[in-house]
Image (cartoon, rainbow, N blue to C red; front, side, top):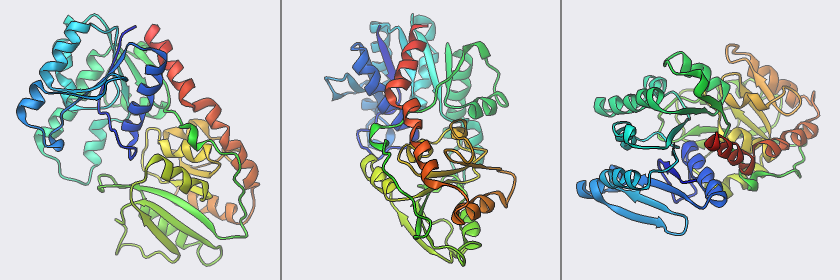
Length: 364
């Protein structure tokens, strides 16, 4: 079976969610199916010339068949190779042209949806150029209209997408993101008598509000009674808004190895009230034995049993996170049992299992 992945391939290990998904899934599929290719593009941000974006070619990894191609070369490659599967793994504007010549291709087009772009663009706190916004929404509309199969990373994302687009539900399958083996760690012990370290992901470039102010405000109410410190992976966009009454540290973006080391040494992971279709970090934190606390507006809730392997708080209740944390700090729960139970998520969401589900989809 000839499989072509279309999207963004990041050679670095400092990856955002969709980039991590694309890189990990391709690696697994290529190991199981030798006739697999990853085709990326010469993006403007990489200082590529117009001619390179049109007819350029760069081999990122010849053995694994990973290439960057200009838009015309992508067309010629697909027309010549006629792959059985074209899997769109990240949302990229250059892929819009694929839907123009789709009728000339024999294979199925599969799209993995990581978000509802229309909603994200409305919620962004950055000003984006109108032409760029138009192309982003156009890609999403075309993908929902013309793709042969739609993969959603969670039930929550599917429910959100249905509110904004019409598409054939018979073409839908839900396959979550996977977890790297490095995060599988069952040796964590948690002692609430000691100062607990809490990890919160706030993102970079301040594209969306992720609830940092809400988390700081909630923790301030507990800081007089319990010892803890907050580690924020991301930018300090809460500065001059709510002053933390506890120790707080901000970290830059980490590689996969650096993130695992941090999670291994940290006890609690909080995901705020903001919408998240799945969140790699939630399941990575679970696999590493962290106590995960997420809102009901996070897709990874499908893998959490409240009070057994993590906690889910009501996104519509301002006091819900406070109540969970207060019980946790007061040693109401057996945190080491919860930590142990959380690590079992790796048995379900390891990349071998996830890639096997994609292979079943390709062959269906």
